[in-house]
Image (tube, rainbow, N blue to C red; front, top):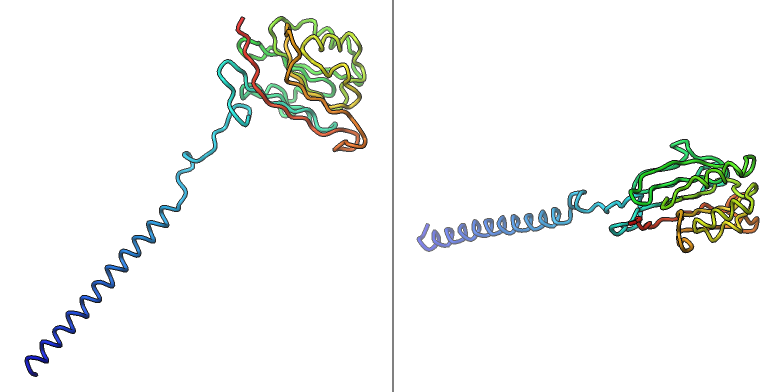
Length: 225
C-alpha cells in the first residue's frame, strides 16, 4: 500500500474515533441534563411544603393575647355540636358530653382553662336547671353555647334575659329547632361579635325538619384584668 493510502486510512480512522468520542460526550451531557430535569422537578421533602396547621384548624393564627376557637352546632337530631378552644376539644359527641338542647362550655377568661361543661334539654327538661347554672357563672368567664335539636321550647323570659346579658343578640328570637352558636362572657359590656343564628324554616331547611349546621371560628380576646 502506498504511503498516501496509509495516511488517508489513518486519517479516516482518526475521524471515526473522534466522531464516536464526541457522540458519547454529547450523549453524556444530554443524559446529565435530563437527569437534572428529573431531579429538579421532583417534589421537595414533605416537611418543607406541608401547609401549616393552626389551633382548632383555623384558617389563620390568632394574634398574641387571644384564644383560638372553632365550633359547630348540632346536625338535626343526629350529630351533636362540637366546641374547640386552643386546640382542645371541650365538647363533642366523641367525648360523650353533649346532648339535646343548649350545650354550654365555661372557660376561664384569663387562662383559657375549662371550668365546666353541661347541656340542658329545652324540649323535655326543666328551664330552672339552666337558670340555676347561669347564675353560677362568675365575672370574667367566657361562655360558649351551641344548640342541638330543639333548644328553645322551654326557654322563658328570665333565661333569655340572662343569656342576653352574656352578649347574645339572637337569644330573644331563638325558636323551635333553630340552630344557634354563640360565644359571650359574664360582665361583657357590648353585644358579642361571635354569634350565628339560622331559623327553622320548612322552605329553606337543609335537612327535613332542621336547618343546616352552623360553623364559626375566631379569636377571643384574653381577659387582662
